[in-house]
Length: 65
Image (tube, rainbow, N blue to C red; front, side, top):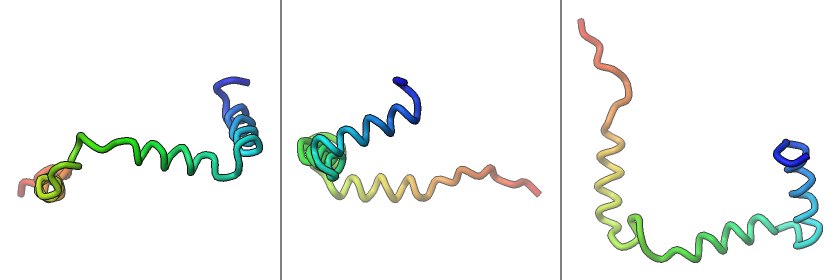
């Protein structure tokens, strides 16, 4: 049943039974704590500027009258 929704649900149930109900929360938190560089980690101001630029870009086409 590999690669099916039912198979994934069975695997998730087994992982939770074997390692605890917070298994996925723990591995997600571990991954988030590992990274300390890259991205906007080093320059918060650059992240703010980039986010502002992205927010200004419209995905809608310009309507011509």
